[in-house]
Length: 158
Image (tube, rainbow, N blue to C red):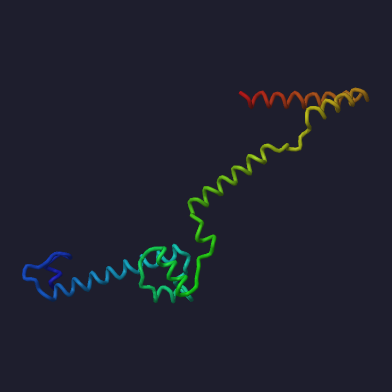
């Protein structure tokens, strides 16, 4: 009932001991929730699953400093547990950036490779051979192919 008269966090004028106990209990509950959330985030950032097994046991018994290094030292000393090498080193933002770089380098390497088209020297030889045989249709088709390639290169350079 004291809460109805006084907003949360304000002190009543008569300093009722019951109000102090209720406020203390409420603040202790808030602190417990925040501590639990921070501890779960700390354990998951190290790579420990606190929902079962060894991770659950570590979580229940850990009362040390809320730093990553202290937790890793505790896990190693008490349980001989070390994080997987990939989980300890990989930063999600860095991994995404590295994946984009690798994909870009792959595209660049692919772009430098010939696409399997006929090189101009081979076409020239084929035109000469077609004209020597008297196959004018084939010679004209090959010449058209050369001109088409030049037009495409010319258009792409603009």
